[in-house]
Image 1 (cartoon, each protein chain N blue to C red):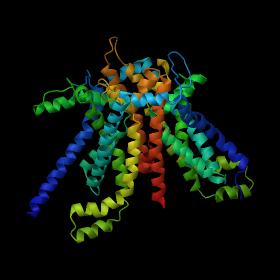
Image 2 (cartoon, rainbow over the protein chains, first blue to last red):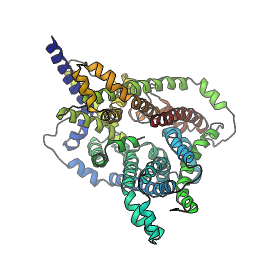
Image 3 (cartoon, chains in turn cyan, blue):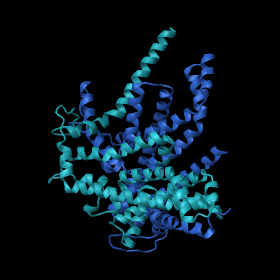
Image 4 (cartoon, rainbow over the protein chains, first blue to last red):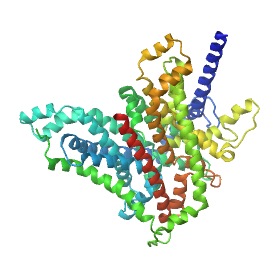
Length: 275
Length: 287
């Protein structure tokens, strides 16, 4: 009787594992197979005669290449700005006793989690409209940076806090200039933290749809996330060949970055930062 | 020893602070002001109207419909969906090895990291009435093809979001389970505890704080999620017009910024409630 129960449990367990695997895997299979098909459709077909023709179409199309460039401009722009401003602020917050420091950090983190999504975009759209930054790369970059900076400062401060001040103190005693200290001690020591913050910002901006969708208008400035909706023929039917290959190319950097960071830093980093 | 003078520190902090103030804090406060006006981009009018927008909002059928749909979406996909499925996955795969575990976790994580626009195309293909994989598979067991997105839109966005987000909860709970000393479970085995008892007395208590954290974060994210718009456009009709989509329609489609801001204020206040609750529970967890 006990054996029977055990067997039934194992069976039920395995059925559950297979079912859940199918649940997560089935929608994704289309992304893996379809771009290599000669005539891609919405149906899932295994590419018996795999071809790279659909990728060639992506690279031959000025509009798609331009969209990838825009994604790169916006992602790197925001990443660069967030890393620079966040490390400066985090260093100062960590090393200097400022009155009300704790309160400021608390308010910043609170605002960054509250002011999110579309509710935040109503006033932001209005603001950019008033100052003439609607439909500009710089507007998009500034909005992303403003949103991610509090989390970035918070994380980097934690990171700098964990680095002992003795290196800096002995360098100061030995007569090193502030610039030298920053360049030779602080920058190398905080680099892992900067990588974490940078990767996080890059992935978030690269994948984001809402912000460029609302803040940009002209098609030549649209990043990949928004441009994909313009891949239709003259009568508005989506071009599946282009879309499938493009989707895979657009996804690969995110997956590659995830594998890299997961190996190096584990989940705590990626999960703790998302949102 | 003072490594950095107070003045230098201020110079380091100010650029970031200014950016945060202009693009994060100021807009949030400005929404409150805008919500008290009749600002519309259509005729460029801007008059102070007091709480009129809020009175209008609370009498608006669409607002209440949106509230109900949002509740269904958040409770269905965040509370019962992602948290429960994440918990199930973490517990059932704890201390397991093998190819099936790798497959399951990797596909779950993949559905979490693929950019949302791609995910939407994948689901549109998966659910397509004529060619979609779902209808083909169901065809094998004799189910007639259905137009899932139009016939069961709420179910689709709820299941879609469970699929999309469960990996986060799974990973959070998995890392929590790893902090349990192995000797606890070994001892339980020695005294012959049942699976259920081990779950209830060892795994669940150590997950308690994490479940709280997970619930607040997931609820906050789901509550603000705009992506279902790409699947359903809030439709058919306004069947899936959750708060973010409702806000989008009022503010950006009908260009009613005053009214749209009033909805935003409601959302921001609810977010504030979640965030304060979260920060408080974080503090409590640390002590």
